[in-house]
Amino acid sequence: MIDKLDMLLALAREQHFGRAADACGVTQPTLSAGLKSLEEGLGVLLVQRQSRFIGFTPEGLRVLDWARRIVGDYRSMRDEIGALKRGLAGHLRLAAVPTALPIVSALTTPLHAAHPRVVFTILSRTSYEILTMLENLEVEAGVTYVDNEPLGRARAVPLYHERYSLLIAADRPLGERREVTWTEVATVPLCLLTPDMQNRRIIDRRLRDAGAEPAATLQSNSMVLLFSHVRTGGWASVMPAVLAETMGLPGSIRAIPITDPVPPPTIGLVYPQREPLTPLTAALVTEARRIGAGWMAER
Image (tube, rainbow, N blue to C red):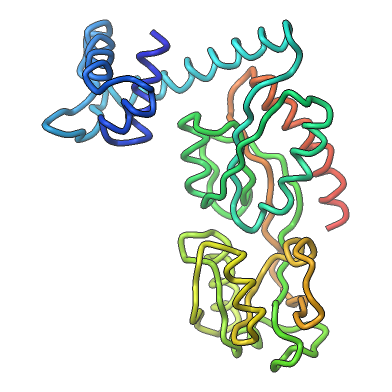
């Protein structure tokens, strides 16, 4: 039964029979037979079929919700039994918004030191993608914004407040300032993250609230690429202060705090709203609570 539910989850993720079969490591006929067997066992049609995947029936959507719970609980049980036998080990998958990637090591490093048999995969994703991956059991947890847009069926541990700085060449206009306003930020050529990133949506709102119309002359989903353009002196960018601190800015680039009357958004760890958690996820949540308590007080 679990393997058939895994097939259903794979189809929900991939929205394509062939790709879902590849994700499950089976042939497409095997996937189709597994889904058909699941439908026959439940006595309902789950998937709308033609020559390609169309979608799920209303009954299929309800079964999909149950499949996420059942498979999630099965994995928790399997991992907990494994931890009792061998100690904490396994594969921990995390997704983080680009602006939070530099702080992920503060979570993974102490966890790996305490449990060397844990291996990590860390992906850069949008806030929306993180919540979707969490719901579809593609990742165990994410690092994203926790108070700016709805989290859906996820729990959160606050880590730090995201405060913003203007990254700009020291010899450019505003480059000598100790602090700047959002109105002043709008006067320089900006390179920013793409609009699908929540960070960009936050910055656009701040600029509009200051009476300016957001106008990035370059946009990318890569913080490294944005930083490389700031280094040319032709652009400035708005980045979280914590990111600027960890990037090791050269003397030619300054990170100037932006004065902001609006409370800063909060970055936190999000994880599934289910009990019990897998041992790996529970250990990660414990670590997040430990470091978050200090960071929230400091930042």
